[in-house]
Image 1 (cartoon, helix red, strand yellow):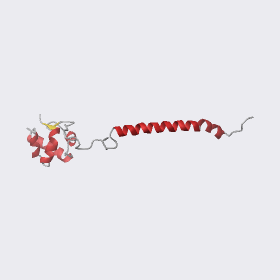
Image 2 (cartoon, rainbow, N blue to C red):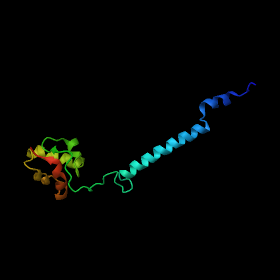
Image 3 (tube, rainbow, N blue to C red):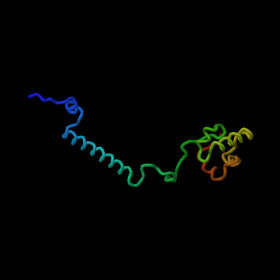
Image 4 (cartoon, rainbow, N blue to C red):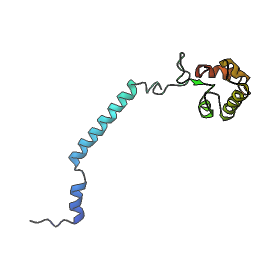
Length: 127
């Protein structure tokens, strides 16, 4: 007995997943989701510890240090509390008054107050 099946019916045999295989695929997906959930919980997902919050670590060291006597505006802009205007003022101050003698001398630049200076201190040096 020859089956008169349309092209679409024959094509669906190749493209569609049979019911038995659907169960296996579904179990595989569930297993992967369980593994991801376990990893998430073990790594602090429930407590919100997956991403470190700013200021959560008391003893932080500077990730980078910039020499204010050689740095240009692009490097200075990366410093905390320093925007393009203050970076340009630091470069202008250095051109007019010569190299900085100490980090404390940065407070003489307009726009750098005591709080900004303290934020800059771990990130800057003077050679």
